[in-house]
Length: 227
Image (tube, rainbow, N blue to C red; front, side):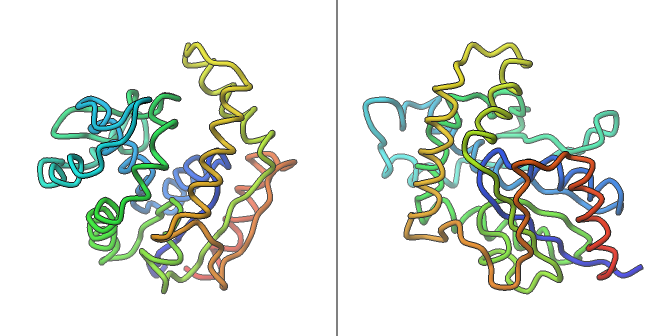
């Protein structure tokens, strides 16, 4: 079985990470959550008050990029890798709605994207990788053997995210989550540097009314044609 690169792009809360993890596990591939990388940079900026409700000190974040060390460590008992920021496990901290509130703004910064895309490209040199994000099939791996573009209605995605946060014990409202989803959609789709767009050769999946098991089986059967 040959190794390929599987690129999964799409809007927030479309289940990209869940799908990517399952595909990687099934194929014994490496899974890379690029969203976690941008979330980690966002957390770094928040902890230093570079970004908050008062504004965004972009120049301070850019000046500090060389101080940000990101890497994944695989957790065998969990079956996937977790995000480390400067040698500290921040997997839980980066999944909060507070980080979600600012991550699209941080992702807009060209210097941030350049730093992370360079790392992401290196991760795929040996192939055998499943990577999800916003620009994987268009910028990071434009020559990926197979690309997927995930989408779903904003209300369905917000409901999924809301339930996930509530299950974690976070104090959030559905209305706040929906507002965040719509805001991120707008920023991700309209930013000048690497906006979220569907690659011409990507296979689109609208999973608004599709269960995880059905979606996985359909996508996995498509992947098998390429490996």
